[in-house]
Length: 165
Picture 1 (spheres, rainbow, N blue to C red):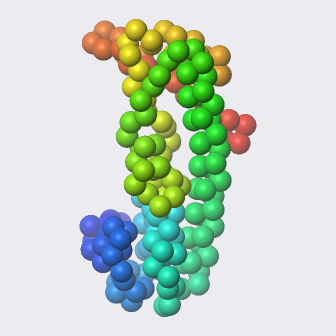
Picture 2 (spheres, one colour; picture 1 turned 90 degrees about the vertical axis):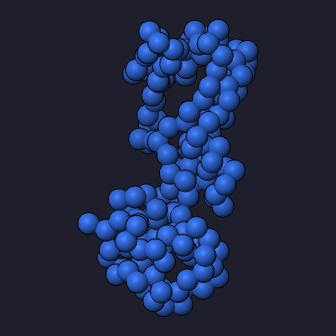
């Protein structure tokens, strides 16, 4: 089983360094498996396009990366629309959340948000606004899945749209 630690040239490439296919020192199938498992396809594709050269990169690898990156971009469009709708609804109810972790990283540090895969959006809200936030989320068809109010006020809500996102 491949891990990114086994491929320092690939790790450097993902961090913004330059590299050719030959210098990555990874087999095509192994790279694609690693990208799938670690959700790196969109980031590898982003870095490849930013590098300005696909010389030496196998056609099947480039085609697989672009297909996966397009899929992630489509998911991100849906996710971004939902995030805006939730933030708008919370704001109309007087709840002003602070986005933390994955979503702000995706939009602030990556060339494209789809390059930072995530399955959730984490927010902080004042404890006094938790009940209002729960009601707003329920009105948007979110379902509470986990609640921890014994130690602190935390709750998780989930929603899967008609496309499975």
